[in-house]
Image (cartoon, rainbow, N blue to C red; front, side, top):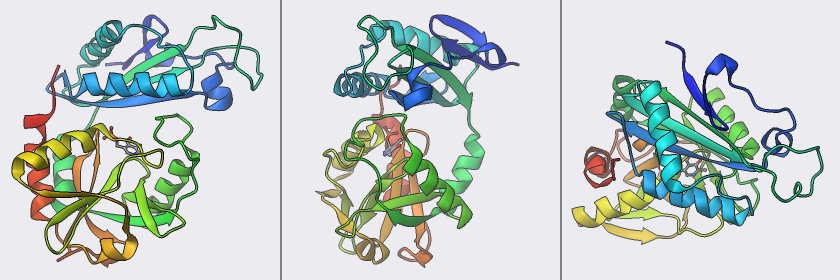
Length: 285
Ligand code: PLP
């Protein structure tokens, strides 16, 4: 079965789906994206993802290309056409097509919209979560507005590749003060020896993950203590547990950081319980 993409109003087989070479996403990374988990054909936390999209677009002064209701129809149609059982739906919105010039294109240039979806391997992901993942650290070298979910991801690409080359699944960025900001495609968390769950406060220095937001709700329900603050590499390596969160990984235990085992080197109880309960709290549509 050929995968189907939505491109500017049309549903097309991937091989026929293309964008203009003067699209500003292609020329300048002038666009934003969202990734939403799909479970049993339902979108997870779609409302929050669309809200974050609207925020990213408005920070960059790109017009919302369609209403949230219309976008929701497109999401569900792409999920249906691609028969997604468990996977992700990907949305990209750019400032549109115009003759190459750094400054904004003429008023009225229509944003470009692409939506794709793909299945993921549930059993393989469960196996990885059962083993836990290794992370490495890399210097924070991104711009100062990573709260905007921009498609400009070169530092994240290089960080993830460095992780892969070192046998790890994720890279954590460490800022000038020695504090971890977040992962290349996830938020970073630790559990201290005295059982407090720590994750960095949200500001312009990290992406406010939708999974992060929901995990905070799960934690409150489970009676866990939270500290929203930055933590250092040393603190993370001395932690009882560590984990990452993202729409495609949900809650993923971290068992090694820069080669050093976290806790007893196995997935922690808190991370595993948060992963287990996550979908009871996430919205499905
Ligand atoms: N931080 C970064 C840099 C990301 O790319 C992502 C997800 O792709 C996240 C955090 C987690 O966000 P969410 O939970 O909304 O997927």
